[in-house]
Length: 214
Length: 214
Image 1 (cartoon, chains in turn red, purple):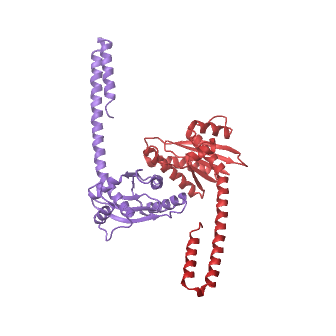
Image 2 (cartoon, chains in turn orange, blue; image 1 turned 45 degrees about the vertical axis):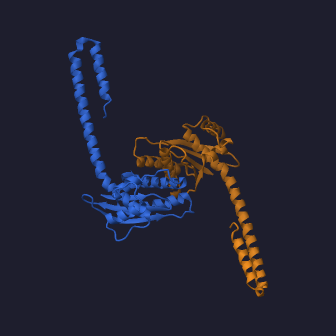
Image 3 (cartoon, chains in turn purple, yellow; image 1 turned 90 degrees about the horizontal axis):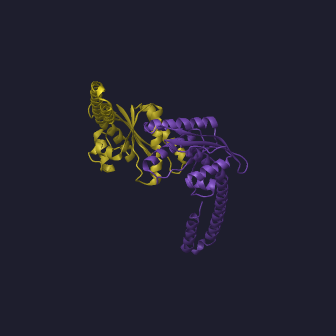
């Protein structure tokens, strides 16, 4: 599976393409950064980043796009620009029918280095090793984009297994509800002559089963 | 001048088109709201809003797009979605070569009601009066989009006058610098035989004029 990772930003937007093979094998297809001048108009900067990201999507034809999830605990001005770029990247993916996955910085760090608190240098070191690159990708935003893509490839199978397990649990819950309802119906039919008390109990029972996870 | 105002949002994105005539005369061309389901994927929601906004741009052919400037003092999750929508709106405008202006909620409230602290109801009441509408635009996001467009029309001439005044000031400063340089040159030529002290003084003078606003 080919993943396009994007570390969104207006000044520097990291972009990396990674191919995932069998097991945990991954290889770097391309890595780069889109830059826009800080003194340009916001809309012109967004257009600049969008053009580069869309060009990468069309050139490398990824099957999925992984974007860093933006939080607002940082500098307010920077976060707004970052959120806007993440929005235009998600939009570009949606226009091409590509699924978009968002991963938090800690998820990426944990996937790559084993610790959600790893620093930038550690992430760069690990992604260079993992992808067997001759030299560390620069700037850090480019390394982060590759880390995001690898994170997605390594987390996706786990997320898939989790979704399968959840679907199995939901199926079991559904069976259980059906068996309960059938039991309540036969109890209600069998005790129809017993009056309102039995009906009230059956009603309460179905309200309870309605509360089970669906 | 025709302005497309956008009150960005994922659940409800207000859109309004207003024509500005002579003086402060304004008229409503169209108003509406783009909605996306809260349980849909983020990228699908962004695509939904983008499609509607772009359709409005193509149908109504505005000359400028006014967007509410997003702040992060509100709910973090909501703000991120709002910022992402404002980004895709600015991008859509940039792709069409349309200028984008951002106005803060207080600027809009002040322009429409005379107070930057007006509440939603007041803004709706005022925009209904100003545009001579038969009934109040609903929801509030639609009224806000119209208010943004009117705010832009009424603030733009002031911004234009300000820019003209600043350009005049810059021109005066440039003349002043040229006169200073000419004076320094003639002083330096006239005192060439006086040695390095005079030259140093001329050099200092030109460094000072370089510090004037350009």
